[in-house]
Image 1 (cartoon, rainbow, N blue to C red):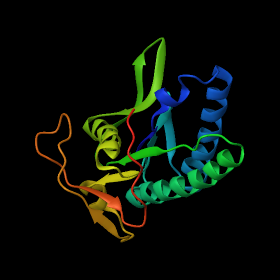
Image 2 (image 1 turned 90 degrees about the vertical axis):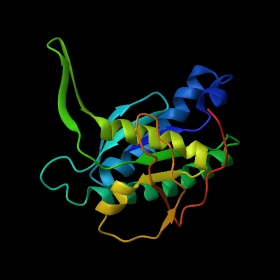
Image 3 (image 1 turned 30 degrees about the vertical axis):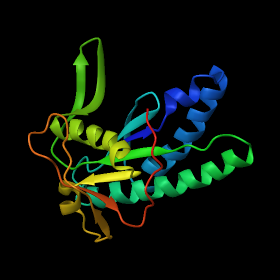
Length: 189
């Protein structure tokens, strides 16, 4: 799973650094709780105004697709609560994009003997990142691939989307949105 705050660069261009850090910390506090406390995911790394989360690491990862999808839905709900708080303080609400893909990845410590980092690498990771980027193109907050849809056990209603070209993938990919989530407002980054 990759998550990114929409229009972050534009939004923070004129904010003092302290306000930028405050906003990011408020957002990440809420999201870390949803991912790690509620749904057994691991936020592997923060990526400026977003993060990468992993599900299904280890022996009991059989319901990883359901955990990732439930996490995405709960993140959207938690963001709505955070946004209500921001609006009450006359601050701009936050919009996000979430991309979820299922596939094999190499997970472990990677780096040099002087500096190792626990991470995941591989095509599945790259695709998840690119799917998150496509949320801007198809104007949906959360997108998942056909691979994730096939691995889910909970049969929530999905919205079929047109095939999408994904950078680095030869054939267009079938993507879905969760039917109950409203389309995201169009924005650019």
